[in-house]
Length: 125
Image 1 (cartoon, rainbow, N blue to C red):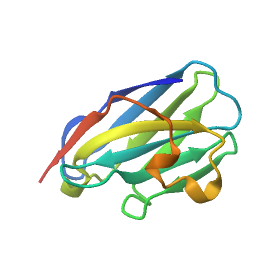
Image 2: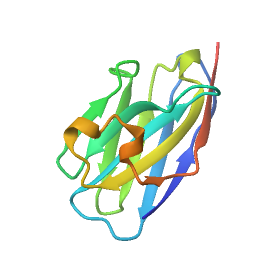
Image 3: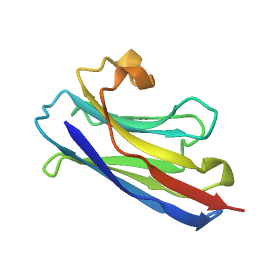
């Protein structure tokens, strides 16, 4: 499965951005898609995930209440609506996917085997 991310850019604090990720290849109802982010010198941080085809969504503590993940199964895409952005949200955002991830591993980057190319999000103060 290949993932192609789009969106991102430069926005002022308090603004909004929307990221999208399209999956190409064979996916099934067990395919989990989500987002991580990374800043220089730090490990990849879990942002949000749409677990399998279950409808269950999970968020990192730092984005809860501000970010919303959604999924379009017909188009095989996942989107991340980011509102009330803060300068500390500045990072490269990566779309991630994998089949058969168990719930206890959804926040672990190493559990995902497909990654998008990364898209820069910059929030100015």
